[in-house]
Amino acid sequence: MVAVKEVLLQLLIACSPAFLFPLVFERRSPHPVHNSRLERTSYYNMLLASCLISILICSLFSSNLFGVIPLNYFLPSLFVGMLYGRRRDGLILAVVELVIYVVMNPSFNASGFLLDTGLCLYPMVLLVAGRFKRSGRHAKYVTLSFFLLVGQYLSTALAFLTWPMSSKMDLTIIIFAIINIAVAVLIGSLLLFVIESSLDKEKLQMQVTLLSRRYFREAEKLQQMMDAAPLSILLLDHEGRIVSINNTFLTYYQMEYPEVIKEELIGRMLMEAVKDFDFEIIGHRVDTTLLNRENTSELVQIRGRTFFASTSPIKRGHTEETVGAVVIIQDITELEALRTELFNADRLSLVGQMAAGITHEIRNPMAVVRGFLQLMKEKSPSSLDHYYRIVMDELDRANSIISDFLSLAQTRSVNKEECHLHDIIHELSPLLWADANLRGQSIELKLAEYLPQLRLNTKEIKQVILNLSRNAMEAMEEKGQLTLETRNSPEGVELLVTDTGPGIPLAKQEKLFEPFFTTKDQGTGLGLALCLSIIERHNGKISVESEEGSGTTFSVMFQRPQGYSAEVS
Image 1 (spheres, rainbow, N blue to C red):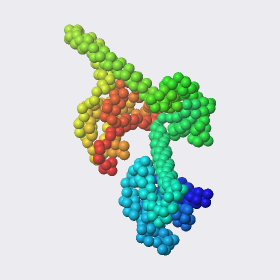
Image 2: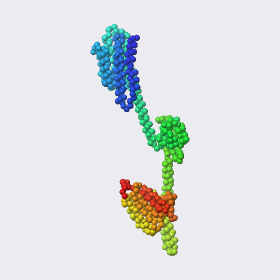
Image 3: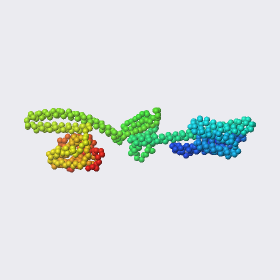
């Protein structure tokens, strides 16, 4: 009975690392996962301390079973520390054990010192430590069991050599000697199991931590992508609860409920969140999507704006299990307006092409009619010349209207070349002065000292200047003054055509550039519309400023060439 107690006491002491190591290892201060060097140092220090405590206590409570068998289970802690720890940790454990043995056995001999301490196995244990750490669990069990079996056997065999013959033949002593060896192997297996379990648990925790951090990083990326999208996006679970929303939806939601924050919406049922809100109809579509597992989409008209709402189920992997839904709401009001404008533009373009073809065909019979009128005039008495002249003037006027209409309907690109705006104005000056003299009017040119060359179509710009100038002359009475001015401005190169006429009412100014709108009794309403079309083809702008009784100014703005400074005058 005493022998059993002694064995159990040594067993508990030798197994102390099996309780101490995981207790300290799992309750240590957590370190960042990326700091693996600090993590490994902490592990080695705890292993060394646990093994040192076990070796010291086992040696202090060592005894001889039946006065013969050495009862000291320090080898499992020693070999475990040497195999799992750093090389210097193994040397520390070996030196401590040798010092303890020398202190507790002052009258030792060489063979006892070599076999009792297991010193002959230390070099071999230290040599295989590196391969041991890289081995699998089964190989580790075999390696450790082999060293413990040999080490404990050598210690027991030394005791047998010193026993009297009567003790050697005692069956009880032999059985306990075998049990003593087996217990050492079992203690080593227990220590190895505990350490391996702690390391596996640590690896698992590290993997979980890494996966968690990766998950949160990916979730953060997804949220940032959702927030960057100019769409309202909502993620829902399988019950229709809001899991996530982006800033676009939150901004629109806060227009109705300014005090609401994102955290208040997360976790709420979608139908509850959008109740009495603009998107309430979309909540019903979500229920349909979750039940039928089908994509739904529709156009929604809300407060005069058009939204395209689509709802898609979220499925788990390649299965048919629906785990949620994603709702995307896009404000397509501007797109719808643009689509309508493009549709109207296509219709107008088609109408314009048809009209251009019709007017082209009209010119042919008009030319024939005018030719026959000239023949008839030559063969008719001179008293009818007045009537012939009126008819041909009207034919010429109709032909002029057709020409303007064809120019207005032209949408093809025009050939442009580098030219100077002042050169175009100087070429037109004689013609403009002739018209002004016939009307008793005057012309003033205020041209800037320097203008950059512009890419223009000379023929079309001449037509613009002639149209604006003749409109100004027709609007003025005798002694009126037409002013053509050029100047550099921050926006570009500006051409100003100013008259001293009666001005244009504000209500009419808004319609001046519409086709067929005119303020003249005999006007066609195509001149200014044609000017607008030409200037737009040159990427310019045309505007009007007028005040009744103070005259009118038409401004034409051309884009300045790249690299030209507006400070040059």
